[in-house]
Length: 142
Image 1: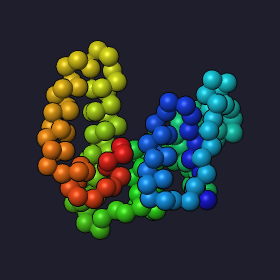
Image 2 (image 1 turned 90 degrees about the horizontal axis):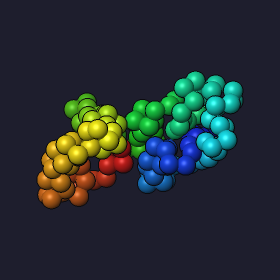
Image 3 (image 1 turned 135 degrees about the vertical axis):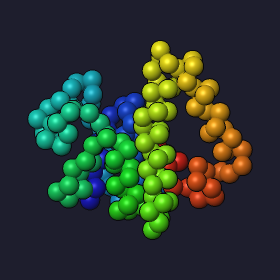
Image 4 (image 1 turned 135 degrees about the horizontal axis):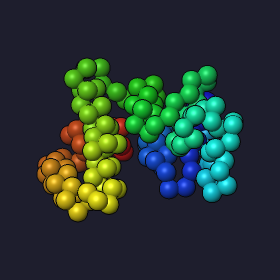
């Protein structure tokens, strides 16, 4: 069974959300970040960076929310067969984890970048319910 490791106020929440949406069978392991549980040797064997989220799926270990989302979507969710459609999903996941996150969460750039980044997103959602048209996919939680 897939195990998702996370902590309070972490990007594990988006992986958790996606796993719930696709009704995957998994176990959530909530690490106590305040006490440094994510820095103990057992967890560092899963993610040597000591960050959450991370997953263990059988013998396979993976960390970084975007990588986890793409893996879970491919293995347990619905990924399109078309390379072009997959690439578009990758684009949105990478955009959310790099461009959008730094634009919103980095205080020095927030005032300038947030409106610039959200304007095209708002235009998309004026015409369709999800990033990639009519159907929810992993890009929508990234």
